[in-house]
Image (cartoon, rainbow, N blue to C red; front, side, top):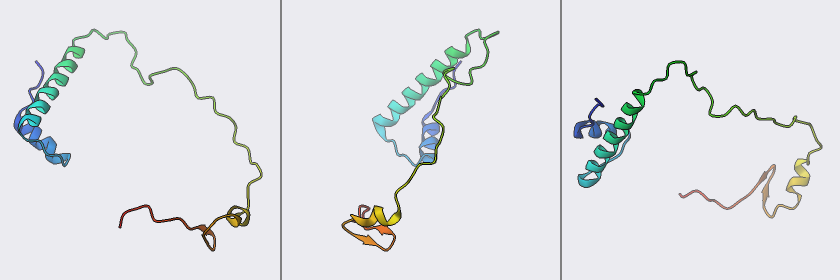
Length: 98
């Protein structure tokens, strides 16, 4: 039998996750979590004897290109066309709220 998620369990999970559930949303979370645990319990009924443990989803291997050193741009050339600069840095408008 699957463990039963209670309102107190959801309250504890919500506190740990810094979430807040009230009324209908709390009841929906309880129902959803119980459904998930029920599904996992069904998976536990499967006979997996002789099935190797899955460590990767795919047997594909990333064939990455070799890193090569190439000619790069100098700091002076990079900053040459910058509308605003401050010694070695680009100056850009502030994008993070105050």
